[in-house]
Image (cartoon, rainbow, N blue to C red):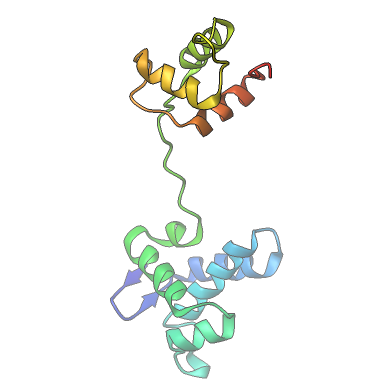
Length: 154
């Protein structure tokens, strides 16, 4: 694999794999499209038609020139596989774990403040007041209650 700022050159093995991906119908449409883009960017692939510009490739494949540049950049930075496959999502740490949900459930089962019933906003405020978290929205409280199959009993 040779990469320069202007050109992408695939090995024969990579070219064969891309042809296989684009012709066998076993991969997702995104991967097939990326394979076709890489084949179009390959300096040696379309010798008989002259080298296609990135704009030509974008027009033929009905994608934006920005998409072509993104695939080219991923190929340059991460190689063949990185250009084909979707980036794995970054996993975020779980902010409200089971312990937090148990505290929320015990709060609901307890008595609400004098003269009031539990509301989502009141629960959120109380969880912050009791220092179980620095902040939480009423919508997050709703989702957590829903996830735990709990209701406010109204």
